[in-house]
Length: 386
Ligand code: NDP
Image (cartoon, rainbow, N blue to C red; front, side, top):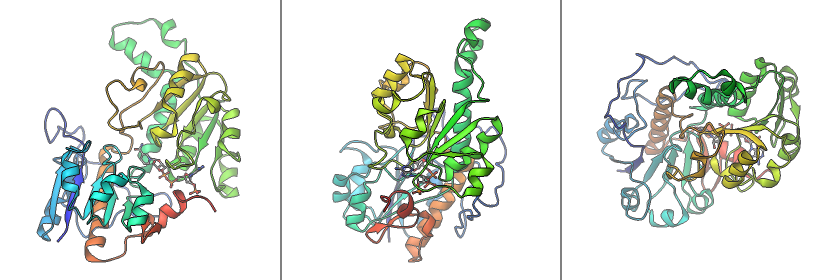
């Protein structure tokens, strides 16, 4: 019987369950590329419930305990005295969400002698040391596509919020003001701007599709080019690398995984080549940006705005400089954990668990690492390009 260790973010401060704003969530039949939605044998939750916090338990307790497995749920994940680190030593499976990541460092993996499977309930498995997982033969899986469209929507929202300067205008209203001149002195239209998309995978491509109707000129870079027909449909200009991409754009959106190649990529040097007054929206991973270089670029005016929802580390400490830098539109890491996304990745997590516990193969699109090597989606997105 397996011990499953599930790390989730804390419950709402006013208690669980919250009062929901709506009675249902939209029904989605398939993902845009035809990939099927998660197919667990059953689910023990109502889609639309808050599943990603401790009391929501991703809806997994009944299923696991009925089969004789043990489920431990905690939000206490950081430091050697954390419940996570104590429970890790004899856990067979670890599950966490990127929004509240249980960092699986080489040191922690060394202590977890029984660990066979690390599931990311969501997308983005960089909180697991993948090289060590490969060495140890640990399987790493994530619920590909479960929240991609939500992240793309959040990206578009933040692009518009920055360019139109929405947040200060909202603040003026809340504070009882009406000075239009104050409100519009940094407000622009997106129409006619050059927008660059760094990495056109599932999220990047969904951002391209959603921004095209705004009358922008679209640019992108990726390790592999999109088909000609797609480039033509959206009038896309391809760039060989990010240096070429950022030179001639007004807005950059970032959608690559965090790897050795992308860590710290948005640094002083790269930012200095961007047009004065550019905007960046990064919902990929905080560590793709050099934290202090972003602050400097906002203070100097090189950047007119920065937004996204990913930080390093997470949760961001109260004194993280991105909380206080000028002209930012950061949210906590929320874009991929809307209530509909939670329903999909909770079901996908159960599908992965069912496969693992019953000895059936996990779908390749969910796999990042398996059998001592990158596999499935991981072999495409995380492995170095040949
Ligand atoms: P995909 O795997 O579909 O897309 C990632 C793309 O990045 C692929 O096209 C890949 O190229 C490309 N890529 C990888 N390395 C490089 C590089 N060095 N230079 C240029 N392109 C590169 O992933 P998703 O679109 O689903 O997600 C992207 C990232 O977004 C995730 O890795 C995750 O970190 C983040 N994310 C954030 C969420 C949030 O809540 N904020 C939620 C979900 C994801 P190719 O495959 O062509 O080699």
